[in-house]
Image (tube, rainbow, N blue to C red):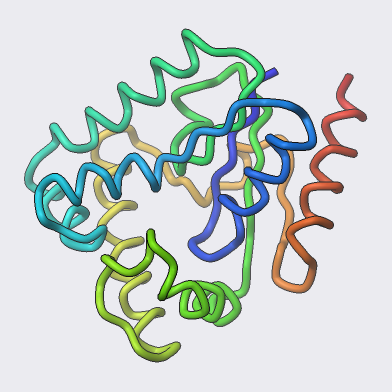
Length: 183
């Protein structure tokens, strides 16, 4: 089974993805980690890589090809990627909603984790929200131009879950319930 996770920044996709992978015994792939590696190799953070991608389509192409390859060569996996619903059409497609302030709080709380340390400087909720809006606008513009896609369009997904007021464990359990109901 192929499961793709998309949604808003700070909604808990990677945390829930890891929980799902463990509970289901699946492999877990994380586009954010792949992008962070790409950014690091260039001496950039994610915001800077996103800005660069506005004028360099090879960045998105590498990320897209990576996802497509996973979809063609793997089975029984979780892929946390904003456009995975598009590149792996035979997957169960899950979308994570979260209140903007809650998502920003979660990201701010993670700012000292290894993968967040090299991201854009932010010190409070407002700076996180500002950075997220810039990144989101950049991504949405590129995806609309390249693929005619709006990642936030709920009709692209099989299951939408709002994670604002529930734990990652509860989110994972609700997704597993949904998956079981489809079999």
